[in-house]
Length: 235
Image (tube, rainbow, N blue to C red; front, side):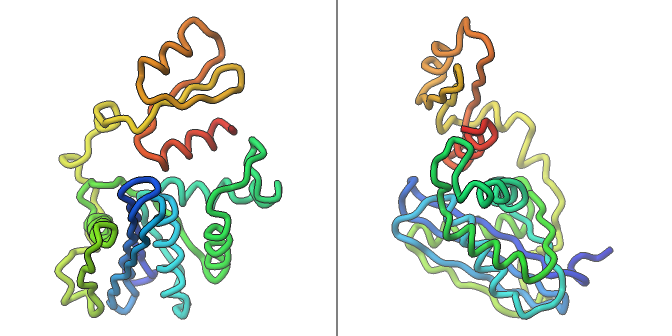
């Protein structure tokens, strides 16, 4: 099946320089007739998660008049897990997490829920910085806006688009299985006796869990990843 001929294919990404800090979002929307539109925007005080959500919402809203189903590719597991798994529980709990804390970005999640009801959407996670052209382009758009620039956004036909968005092949040369182990930690999380702690260094984290039973610990690579771990642990 040629997904680009039968579906609206969307790539999205978000970025923030600081958390919170200056942020941007980017999207590439490819229509079955070959039309391609780049979208993007900025926010002076935001978070990466907000920008990931906004990119998705804006792209879906832009393509809402099309009746074709959507294949949405994003490197944000926060967005995918949130809309396909977590949101049902949040709604049932009155928009509270399992730890009885208010869900962050509630207004954006509510907007995304509205967009998902308009047509069938297939959510597909892609590896970031792995050579997938559409993801690389949305990353560039998002970072450009976050940096205060205004990139030129394309709006035309796929034949005139310099980026081969149909190339969705994972490039192992750009992304190896060792990336996570080598990547610089954003933070370390530990869960001991049901209580979570966030540490700046592995030494602090190790000191808390050493010698104790039924503990959990994990390295977070970003604020988004830190949030995902908390949700996974139910705290």
